[in-house]
Structure formats: structure tokens, C-alpha cells
Length: 273
Image 1: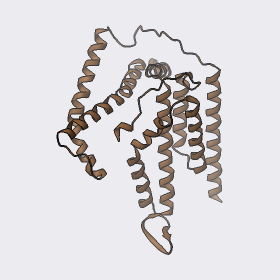
Image 2 (image 1 turned 60 degrees about the vertical axis):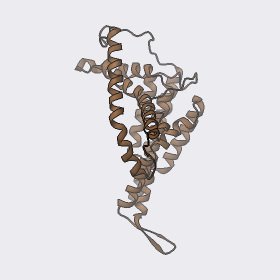
Image 3 (image 1 turned 30 degrees about the horizontal axis):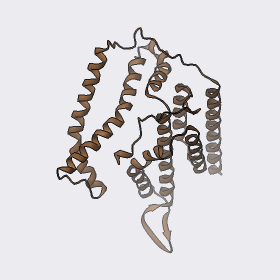
Image 4 (image 1 turned 90 degrees about the vertical axis):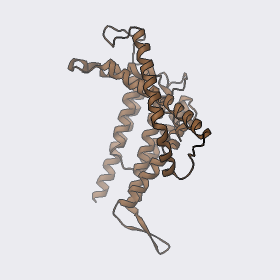
């Protein structure tokens, strides 16, 4: 399951999506994720899935890479749907005159909504990571948080920590896979039902944490040896500036947010009558 995770990986390219300013992509992704929290219109979710598919096509990123994140988190999606289907009160599910114990129609609808919401958020995050280099993400976050420095927020250090954390995700996934194969070669059994597999995976936590601490120490020594002292007095080689494609992307995201708000309001008004 961990091998399918692509979060934190970057897929090099020269598409218009890759060339967008990282601030545009970060703000657009966060705005879409925020609006998805309160949207409950199923056609809008499918429209966003279609829009993401078009963006993936434009970016030149293989479709399997963002879809691998859904495969990695499929257990969470299944649990989310089952929990809402079984614990949301409503009309019982009757099929061919037989009442299915547990789920309700309202619960199944809520399960589909929440599962689609998680899927779209995961795909947006995956597309953002795959089309934006880690250093660009760091610079974009730092520039966005720059106005908060007057209130004492360490924008550079916070952006650096976030990017390092994201960059270490693929490394830790690869290390976990290597440890799992090493323990399997020594007789460990990681097969069986999902609950048994999760219990067996706990044996990887101790060596994985030790490896993470060792890598963090090596990174700290490497940064200190290069005289890294934080963001004070540091300059940037590349100056960020919004281009025409950025304004087009901002207009598209704004239009999508407006349509989402309008569709959600119409559905709410329709429900009142």
C-alpha cells in the first residue's frame, strides 16, 4: 500500500501547469480544498473530477501517479463510506423486499459525498506536489507568509520545515518498504486481512523512527556545515512574478468557486421547498 503513495514526489515537466507561479497553485489548491468542505452537490464533485483529469492531461503527468494516492488510501475511503452508511439515521435500505441491516439511504448518500470529497482533495494535493518543485513550494509558502513576519511569525523557517517534511515522505515510504522486505526475508508474515496487516506493520515503527531521526540529524549537520542560519539576510535567486497564465488560472479558480457557491445555494434553497 505504501509503495503507491506519491505525495511529496515531483514529476519534472515544461507544461503550462508546471510554469505557473507556486503562489497561484498553492492559493488555488487551498481555496478549492476549503470550498469542498461545505459542498454537498454530487454533480459538482464529478465536475471537479473531470476538471482534475483535464489538468492532469495538460500537465503531462501520467494519470496513474495521482490515482496511486487513492489506491494507497483506499482503506480510509472504505471506512469513511461504511461509517457514514451504517451510523447515519434514515430510511432503511430495502432490496427486493428484504431489509438490509445496518446502512440507510441517507447514510449511503453521506458516505458517497464524504468519500468523493476526500478523493478530490487527495487528487488536488497530488497534482500540486507532482507539478511543483519542493524549492518552489518553499519559496511560495515563504512569500505568502511574509506579511505575517511583522507579528513574529518565522515565515522562512516554517516554510523550510513544511517542505522538508513533504520531501521526506517518499524517503520514509521507500525506507518502510525496504524494512518490510528485509523482515519478510527473515520470516515475518505481512499477509492476511487488513487488521492483521496493520498489526504486523507496527513492527516497522521502531526501526523506521530510528532511521528518520538519523536522517534528520544528518540533514541538520549538513545544513550547519553550509552555514545555514535561517532566513535572516538571505536573498532569492529567482524573483517570483505573476504571468498571464497565472491570471488565467486565478480567473478559472474564482469562476469555479463562484459556481460551487451558487450550486450549493440553489440546492439548499430547493431543499427548503
